[in-house]
Every structure is written in structure tokens, then in C-alpha cells.
Length: 111
Length: 276
Image (cartoon, rainbow over all chains, first blue to last red; front, side, top):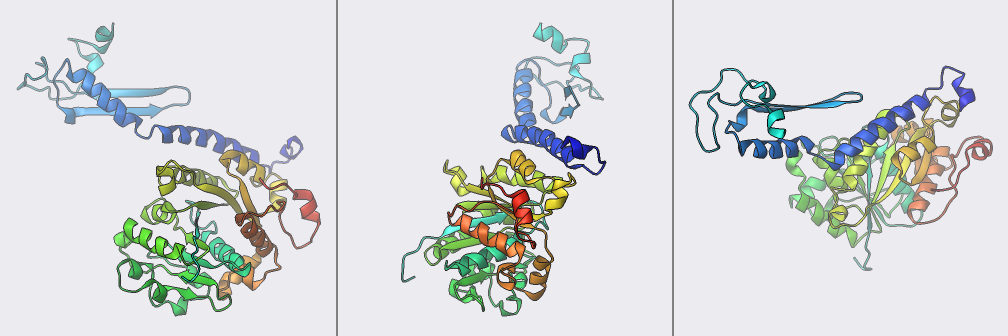
């Protein structure tokens, strides 16, 4: 094969490598068909135990990078949030990331 | 109906369109019939039927698969017996645009009825992974995955393999659909020059045993032009010989794997390989 690579027409090795990488990734995803759905469900259950919010105002996004992937969870929480069950009348006009929220951050909760 | 048969249900599938599913269904069906087996080929491509055309029966279609499912016609009325081989039959697809015309229960009933009358039921799957394709594979015992040595075809085949392992009745019962890879439109010299994925590359990536390698040939186009399976139209041609060998492997025979060629010998020596 090395010998053939000297000639520029040998593109099959590239095809093989691209396929191997892609299919390894796609097969992995097939086994966890709805990873985002499961994450969403579990994260929302966890947070709703402590804070009440509108389930429609939740955005969960996954970005796959080359070496690192990011999971962004964006939950809009009313300013006067309280224990679950308490309904709040005032909502923040724009959604704000939970981790940027001045009152309580995810980091503090985890710590 | 006289002798109690129990057919093997084979789905010819690929995911990607244009790789040779219909050609391969016709060629394998005719080859098996030529070997003395009782064969029915079913076109599952509702709305875009073509198996009738490739088999030269387009002017003899009266009733179709959907008519049988809906009770408009009885199964024997819809079956078209091949003019060249009397034990080769075709059940055509309909031209309806209604995608929901094909139902799971309907297909199950038709397959069950055919099982007692034939040795082989070969289902020609439509391209894609929609209803038609999943129903074509639904009751399969065996799958023939048609793949071109090209990236998009290999990727789609991998997707189809995933579906065969999860969406078929056998898979749901915890059993295993027997899978075979049929590589079509293969150019041995291009693969040797590194311009095309080699058979070993495709086998390594998909890890499905090889059923046959069909070389690219003008005979395939010629056969479809005249409406005759290549295995009947030019049985001595390289693609026909490859299909005949694939058919015998399907039957369980062990035949050394090679790529048939015009110049007998040279390629066979160069690309001779053992059956997977």
C-alpha cells in the first residue's frame, strides 16, 4: 500500500480512515439512541426538586467538538423562585443561564 | 400447496439507492430458480416499482402487493409467473402514492401465505430507512446487504445493519438475522490501484461475511435494457457467474470467493480469496 501512496491517485486509504472514524461514532450513538432525551429528563427532575420553573423554557444543547464536546443547559427561572409547588407570578423577561444566576449557581449546589 | 414447504425469507437491502438492489434481486431470484428452487421475488418499493421492468414483466402486471393486502385480489391472481423460468414468480409493488398502503399485518399475512408455497421469498427493499424498507426486512430470516465500494454506500449499509439487528421480528425475539454482504459495481483494477475501497476494507469496516463480489459490467445494463435478469440474459458473463455463485452460497454451498472476469484466470489468480 505504501508504494501506491506514492502516486497521488490512491484515495481509498483516506476513504477507509474516514469511514472507520465516522462509523465508530455513529455506532456508539446508536446504542444510546436518545442520550439528550435521557439527560434532559434527569436534569429537569433534579432541578425541579429545588427550583420551580416552566419546563417549556428549557433548552438543552450538545455541541460535538474534535476533542471536547459541550453540553449546554439553559433553564429560565422566575426571579422569585422558590420551593417546588410554589407558583411565582413574576418571570424574568429574558432567559438567563442558570450558572450565571447571581443567587445560586450550579457550582455552589454541587459543592 | 401440495408439498408443505417453508420458505427462507431474504431481504435485499442497502439503505442507499442506486447500488443494485433490484438488479441483484432479479439476478439472484433467477439464479436460484435456475438451480431448481421455487422462488418468488416481491417488490416492496411502493410508488416506485421497478422490479417488474427489470424482469420484463411490466406489461403483465394486473394486481399487486397492495391489492392483495387490501383484499382486492387473491395472492395467486397477483403472482406473475416468469416466461422463461416457470418456478420464478414476481409479486409487483403498486404505483400508489399512499405510503401507508403497506401495513405490518398485511405484509405478515402475505409472507405467511407465500412461505408454504415457495422455497425462497426474496424481498426487494426500497432505498432509505422509511416504512417500505423496514417492512421489507421485517420478517426476513436472511439479509443480503448490497454495497458499492464507496463511502456513502458503506455508511448507509452500516445503518441498515443496525436496523436489521433491532427492527426485524427475529431481532425482537432475540434471534439473529443472518447477514451477507454483496459488493456490486466492483472494479478490481481500481481497488488494486488504491482508487477504490478494496473488498477487505469494506469487510473490515462492516464485519459482515461476504456473499459475493459482482464486477462492474456493461452486461448488467444490457440485461435491464431488455428486461431480463443478467443471470438469464448472459449466464456466462462475469456478473452472472458472480451472481450464480452468490446464489449457491445462499443455498449453503461453500465456493471459493473470487471476482469473475472476462479474461479467465488472471484476475482470479490475482484476487482469489476464501469465502468469509
